[in-house]
Every structure is written in structure tokens, then in C-alpha cells.
Length: 283
Length: 330
Image 1 (cartoon, helix red, strand yellow):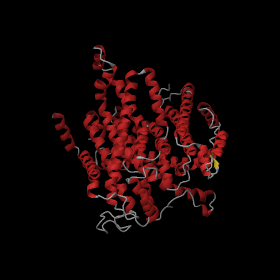
Image 2 (cartoon, chains in turn cyan, purple):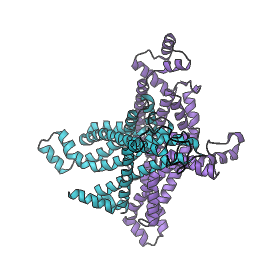
Image 3 (cartoon, chains in turn yellow, red):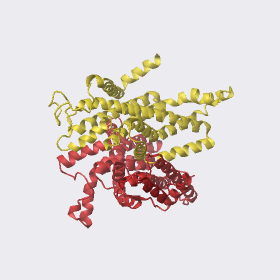
């Protein structure tokens, strides 16, 4: 209970984190209520095309070149952004933690091998690799989640490895070894919980990056063709850049606010979980 | 004080080159298997482009490309061709793949170079300013804007820039690298290209500008609290000189490493920037290759880009050792 209380008071003290949480809650709300507010799929024609925001009552944020409701697109797009962001980072976390934990815990040649592979993946330009994975496996939500996980895991692996290398030398870990605890148990029940704070902060920020990358893939037209995402909306709106710039501006702002929210929450979590580093942010 | 001179780190260089070569080999092998993973092979793709699905013709093509050989000998042939930079022929673009990529390289390097320069200079100026006014309003404004820029989709900011600076204000061209109809030569051409370069380079740099501002600010705050700064301040050195001459040198070191690790991301980002601005570089080529489903070209770009990153990282490592003599090269 004390932990909850102190987290709550930390949130109230840090208005930036509060702002981030509010924005994030809004995006979740949009994703959850999309079918409720907009029973029609977002790619249906709901009114005359190219209606500016406020011009047509049926679509408060206007309609695009094909008469689709932009607000409905925003609500349904939130679903895809959140799904892809959270799912890809979760996959990347599982894999990154496994690689990082084994490398950091065992050291020696295992560490050497795993870290060389990790560095190799960091050498390949991330976004290009994501494009190629989508090109080879075909554009679907599952493949996009996979491709973003492929480019995201190395950063987590390196972070976890660093934490494990430090924690492995701590007296309590040595104690666990002495009492005969199995390696697997030490790694997952003793060290990992202590390494999680850094991972949590990093994954929060990586969700933002993943969401932006998904939108970039969709923007280029390499996304799942069966769903409406903020990236596809910007890509479509690009064609009306001169006469109806609101079409590409609105989903861009939605993306910006979502990424901002995740970064604010990540920063706030960092202050809360690593209070010793707080001075670095100048709080 | 006499600067410490030391011998050129040949052993370090040799080790890194060997590792780089190994990394290239592994990337090439991964690339080969990615190609194999894709549905259909080059023969089917070619037959499709020729408008036929005749099994005999496809079999003949397979034999011609060695696609009927065992996997390992195919891999070997692939690696040999790669080593001689024979990346095959693109039937979509009617050109050898290596020629295609290398002819597009200068445009991308120019864009990348300009973006890196903007991001580094901007990062230093704004980062140092933020650190000098830590927790006062200039810092708060700079830090918040950096946070905003960090979350901005880079291709979207590019579109917004086109909308504002090119379409509405008419200050810059909307897209392309130069006005080919003007047939500019010499200095006029340089000015024309620079004019076209401004927006894409800015758009490309925005995300990294945000990172570098935060990095320089944090580094400066750390260095400014050290004893040697207190001594310098006690000697009566001005705050400006203190920041830019004494502290910055130390604070900027981590930046060199980060810029090095970002080279690959700059290349990846070029796909977006070049597509938005119709910049005739490798990124735009990659978009076209993806659009036309030219898998071989796509993977060749990925492999060559990775090679480029490996070389760039090597250069950055050496550069870092030169500007920071306390680094031990192992």
C-alpha cells in the first residue's frame, strides 16, 4: 500500500508525468470505445469528401478525399497503434531479457557470442530491416509486430546484460549460489526483479518508437492493407497537401501526442524508479 | 602542457577490421536466407515480368541462375558474387544493382551529412544554452521542445515543412534535388542543390536534434559541477568561455559515440525523408524497390547499407580515440 501511495504522490508532484498519463488514458479510451462511437468501419464513406473540420456535422474533424470520417479513423487508428506498440515491445522484451540475462549472468564466451549477435542487429539500419522483413513475410499486423520486435530487442538485451553484470557480483546473489539455488531460479527470481526498473523505463519509451515506426511503414504503404492506421491516413492526406492539409495534420498530431505521452510517462517512471538519477533531469 | 602523442593503433585497427569483415559475412548470410524465405524465387519473378508461367521456361531460368543447385553451393556463389560487388541485375530498373545503388549514394550521403551537421550543431548550441540556464525558463522551453520533437513522426514534420515553407511561404522548392530544367552549371548548380537540400536535411535532423540536445544538456550539467570548472570560475573566466571552451570539450565526447551509432538510423530514416521530398537517393530507391517488389534490389540495399554502417562505426571509433587520448584501444 505504501508503494502505491508513494507512486501516487510522485505522480501528483510531477505534472509532466500526469499529463502523459492523461494523454495515454485518452488514447486507450479512443481505442476501447471506437466501435461504440463509430459502429461503421472507419473506411466507409460517411459524408461528402473534403469537408473541413466543423463544416459537416456528421464528421467533427472533417472528411478525407473519399468522404471518410477522420475522427472515426483516429479512434480506430488508436487501436492499431497501441496494439502494435505494446505487442512488439512485449515480444522484444521477452527476447531481449532472455539474451541479456544469459549473457550478463554467465559472461565468458556465451556473453561474447550473444553480444556480437546483438551488435550485429544494431549495425543493420533498423527501419530498412523492418521494411525487408515486411517485404519477405508480407504485410500483416502480425508481421509488422514481428518486424518491429526484431529491430527493438537488441537495445533491451544490452541494458539487461549491463544490469546483470553488476547485480551478479552482489553479495545476495553470491548467497543464493552458496545455498545451492539453480541458475535459472537465481536469474529469474532473484536478479531479474532488480533489473526490471531500467527495462520498464526503456520499454515505455520504445513503445513510442515502435508506434512511430509502424506509422512510418503504413505511411509508405507497406502496412496491413486491411486496417486504417494513423500512418495510412497521413499517407492518403499527403495527396491533398495543398487543398486540404488538415487531413494529414490531424493524425500527425495524434501520433505526436501519443509518443509524447509515452515519453513523459517514461521520464516520470525513471524519476520514480531511479530517484538517485533525478538530479540529472534537474527536478 | 605537452600533448600526449602515441603510436597509431594498428593492432586495434586490425582487430576491428577483422570483426567488421566477419559481421559483413554474417549479414550477407542472413540476407541470403531472407531471400530464400520469400515466396517465389528470382526465376518465377522474371518469368512473371516476361508475362509467362511456362514451367519449362522457369526451369531453364532456374538452371541459368544456378537456382537448381544445392543450397550451400548457392550460398557460396552468392557470397563470391557479393565479394566482387556483382549484386545482379534489376529488371525493374533495367540496370545493374551495384550501378543503381552507387549512383544514388552521393545524394543520400549529402542529405545525411547535412542532417548530421544540423543535428550536432543545433544539439550543442541548444544543449549548452539549456544547461547554462538549468531549470530556468530558457532550459524549460528548450527541454520541452526537445521532448516534443523526440515524439514527432519525422516524415510528418517533413510534410508540414513542405506545407509551410514551400507551399504557403514559397521560400523553398517542394521536392527534388535540383531544378533540372534550368540546366545550371558550376556555382549556380551548387546554390540550387543547397536550396533544395534545406528542408529535407532539417526534417531528417529533427529527431536527432532532440536526442543531442538532451545528451549535451545532461553532459554539460555533469561537467559543470566538476572541480576544474569551479577553479576556472574562481580564476575569473567568463561563463560563456567556461561553457563553450572548458566544459563543452568534455561534455561533447559521448556525442561522438552516439552520432556514430546513429549512422544506421540516419540511413533508415532516409527512406522516409527521400520519399517525402522525392530526393533521388538510396532511400527513395529502396521505397521504389519495395513498391515494385524487387526483392534482390531491396536486400542489396540493406546489405550495402549495413556495410556502410560498419565502416562508419570503425571511423568513429578511431576518431574518438584521436580526440580523447585517455581512451584505451583494445
